[in-house]
Length: 465
Image (tube, rainbow, N blue to C red; front, side, top):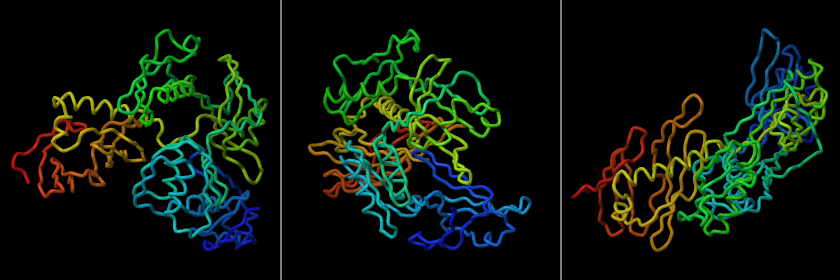
């Protein structure tokens, strides 16, 4: 039953404003760690069509969706309705600034929800037991929860007002499909970008292992070429050799196999009479694990259901995607970290030892504590050590080319002042830093940037300020 409720409804137990039993279509599309929407069409000629308005709530398959778009298609005599899962009401709850240090998933969601005014009965929980740190600034509560999912590498499950951030689990339902040839209705993508046979792990404070490079135990597999594929990978939270080695081996395990992705159009399969071996996908859910027997590759592998489009009028899935869970711009994250490391090394070399110049700024040692990527910015929290540890943060704007690859990174603003004992205020201008120290003295440092917006030199202005 599909029920329409008032925009101010709070219980959702009655038949609401109307039961929309004359829908021509009703598709719910959910993506693991991503979008969750309902798309509905309703005849314009029916009396109840005029009752459907923005911000009202549709209850379908037991879930609540708030309408954000209504369009009248006069030619087709239909009303097109788009609604987002009620979880996205949290997109309108604002967090100015929040710092979470060394917390579990539950500790993170507790801190985030403490910023929420409680106007709706959201119950947000987490079973993620690893501890991490996360900085949130000028983001919605929904955005903050997605950042936590990304940082903890978990999975987001939404059941009306009950939200659970869970550790990634197999959730194997015993579904097996066989792929052996090109079949109309199935699109297969195989990529090697994530595959590594060896890594050079670097921990906190530039910690490295005695053996320097760790090699994947599957190196001799016929899947790999004869040369090693080595990449430097940073593990900023690894402060000792044992932790660094454990995290590095886990990373190698995650990057030991090919990236495989399937788009399955079950309607097209039905039309092509090619359902055999794929019928079980009609009822799988987001987050389930499916076993694929791949005749061409000669291997069996397990893969997640990451997206489902479900036809609620017929009670079956119409489209299913199998692949890796989405983490917020995750495909760029390692590239960003690598770019930051390389940029720092280049700057250090080009100005003949930037550390000496930073000492003049009363800074002794700086590392990147946390790096978060949003749709249009890189948010970096720096940790500065001088006797005791302090932090400051900055935003960087970036641009991409048509393929999504980063083409430039530009400092946008330092959005919290340096938390050092010696510094009172740090103002960043387009060409200079203006610094006021707690003792009342001040200084000016000019800086220049290269064509990509990166700082290439810093020079103190004698007699400045």
